[in-house]
Length: 296
Ligand code: G1P
Image (cartoon, rainbow, N blue to C red; front, side, top):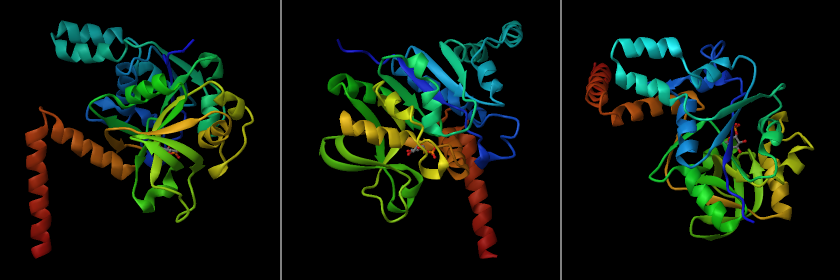
């Protein structure tokens, strides 16, 4: 009998060192793009893709994430009394999904974080969404992958093309052949040494995996960066059951590093009806000042 993908894991135990000191006492997943924490965009994508249960893997100093997705009666009561109904709707929306939590007790890497979720997953296919990439698309990114899983009944990894000089930052696939957007894969390589990547197709933080992946994660072998890598377990799984890569449709925003984060904030503001025109004016003004300084 075919099994449906209804569970998702969102790893959120990382230290967020790229955003220090902001992340000294606040989880990086709570840094906002406009008025929403980045992790809420990820949860929204999972829900819009038909996921029913989400497990967030947290660690030390991540309580604010649990509070965010919980009810806040004082705040709701206050907004209600002041007649701020639109805000009330948004505040309530973030506490409507069924979210579970587990703590990763040691920072041993992404592969280890996923492994801590094995009991929650049991013997079902499941999704993984990484918080460093927000994807905007007509059909939610994860939904595209679930659709492909339903058709193939095999693990599907979301990929997109990156510039050649960026491959060292990602898990990269070595494709053999493709049928439209779907690739058969010979090798999955985590963070290849610059100049050695077999393609420009990079793993983009969205995965549908069969539960057999836990057999390989259980070994907890250390990979790139001294961490247990999910990509290495996928490489091993691919030797015994096909793991496909799917070049999903959609624009991806890298909110895991500072320049990507700034760019995402600007782009989202320029697309937001409320802020659009004022932000455009600010940008024109700033660019004018900059070019005047250059002329002087
Ligand atoms: C992780 C994965 C990598 C993937 C990347 C996408 O790396 O290990 O395969 O390409 O996310 O953002 P990280 O960025 O956590 O080092």
